[in-house]
Each structure stands twice: as structure tokens, then as C-alpha cells.
Length: 281
Ligand SMILES: NC(=O)c1ccc[n+]([C@@H]2O[C@H](COP(=O)([O-])OP(=O)(O)OC[C@H]3O[C@@H](n4cnc5c(N)ncnc54)[C@H](OP(=O)(O)O)[C@@H]3O)[C@@H](O)[C@H]2O)c1
Image (cartoon, rainbow, N blue to C red; front, side, top):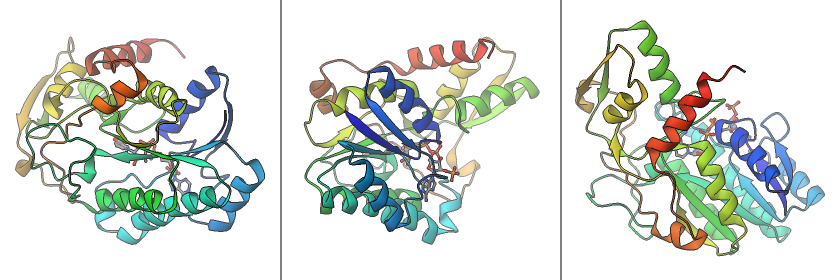
């Protein structure tokens, strides 16, 4: 397939592009410097010139806390930016994959969220990602919306790298234990996306690594073997500008059935990533 990737310089984009190329797709990778998705004319020109089979839209405003104080920018990029891609795709009969987030849910449920569960984002970031989902559904019939969670991977600021480097400098780390979800490596998510896009079974999917944990347990796993103590704390002891869902585990049954394989357990993905970090560059 001929694929266009927006936000190709971001953490997911940098994992996804080589993964798609390794599967012999022709990939047009567009980092922000080459395509600003908030400019409709740029978007239209890129899509009408290249006429890809599918645009994988990874570009996003991802600063969850900062979004609370700059909602206009979050909606401009995640809402209107996504709508720009969707409209240009609709005008040129191009399919689209939009990467969305577990933060579209309120976390009040205690069982994994299915793709048909009610969305009710608690933060500006979550609301702006949901605005993007609605734009995609408004303009297109051939789309995938792929909700994922707790991303980390090479080439991006993320929880694993932060905890790992803090563990070299401190004896103790305080991490919240009352937010439950699933860590997901960009490398395994890229494989899932690559499997999904060849199915042509359009719709909403939940794609993350397999399993359930808290940020506290996740941190313990990251520093396992290192001389550092991880102390569980509650969200209320570490106030942040954006409210996060208490429970954002995603039900991945539809994805597993569609791609015909299980998703990688989060601990396996983490181990592989930490091993990779040890390799000399
Ligand atoms: N990270 C997570 O934990 C997580 C969890 C669930 C879902 N997601 C979703 O997964 C996707 C990928 O996230 P990520 O972690 O790879 O985020 P990321 O590293 O922040 O990548 C997003 C990329 O989009 C670029 N971008 C920002 N504004 C743009 C614009 N106007 N035009 C074009 N590009 C623009 C960013 O450039 P600059 O950095 O230069 O602004 C960055 O390179 C996003 O849709 C995100 O919402 C992420």
C-alpha cells in the first residue's frame, strides 16, 4: 500500500514508519516540519499530490496537563487538525487511521471499556481527542479509529525513560497506585496497526499491550533489579492540572478477532524495550 504518516517525527511515528517499510509498504513520512495539519491547504496539497491509499494520522497535541491551560491549541491540533485530514481524505477517496486515546473515557467503570461504551473525557486533552474521533466519523466511511494507552518507546519523552533515569539518581520514587490501565510500547502498537490496516475492516478498535496494572506496579517493573524503593501514593497526594481516569483498561477483543492474534503482554514489551535500551547505539 501507499501510506502517508502524519506526525512522523513523534514517538509513535518514529516506530511506525520503519515497521510499515519493513512490510514493503511505500511510506511518505511527514513530520510537523513538512506538514502542519492545522493548515488545510497544506493537508489538501499533500493528499491530492501523493494520493495515498491510507493516511495514518499520528500528529497530535499530547501535553495532557498543559492542555488545561491552552485548550484552544489542543482543539486546533487534535480537533480541527484531524478534521482537515478527514475532509481531504474524503475529497480524494483516501482511507484514514486516527490514533486516539483511553482518556476519552471517564474511568468510572470497573470492567474494561469496549469500543461501544459511552465516552466521557475528563480532561481537555481527552475531549480534544474525542473531537478528532467525531470529525473522522463525520466525514469518512473508510476509517480506523485506534484507541491506545500509556505509550512509551524509543525517541520520545515517556514514563519508562523518566522512571529509569530517576532511579539512577534517587533512593526512593513516589508513584500513583490508584490509576489502572495498560502500558503499551510503540513498537508492538506499530505491529498491531500494520496488521489492522490490511484487513480493510473499518471501525473503532482498542489496541494496547495485553494485561492490566497501575503506574506504581509499572514503575516497580521498570526499576526491577535496581537499588531503588518505589512508594505507592494516591492521586490526591500528587495533584496535576488534568484529571485522569481512575480506570482506563481497554477491551481489545475486536482487535484480537480482526487481526487474528493475541496482543503482546505489557511485561514482555517492557522487557524487550529495556533490553534494547542497554544495547550500545
Ligand atoms: N503518549 C501517550 O501516552 C499516548 C496515549 C494514548 C494515545 N496517544 C496518541 O498516540 C498518538 C501518538 O502520540 P505520541 O506519543 O507519538 O505523541 P508525540 O510524540 O507528541 O507525537 C506527536 C507528533 O505530532 C506533532 N505535531 C504537533 N502538532 C502538529 C501539527 N500541527 N502538525 C503536524 N504535527 C504536529 C508533534 O510535533 P512537536 O512535538 O514538535 O509538537 C509530534 O512530533 C497521538 O494521537 C496521541 O494522542 C498517546
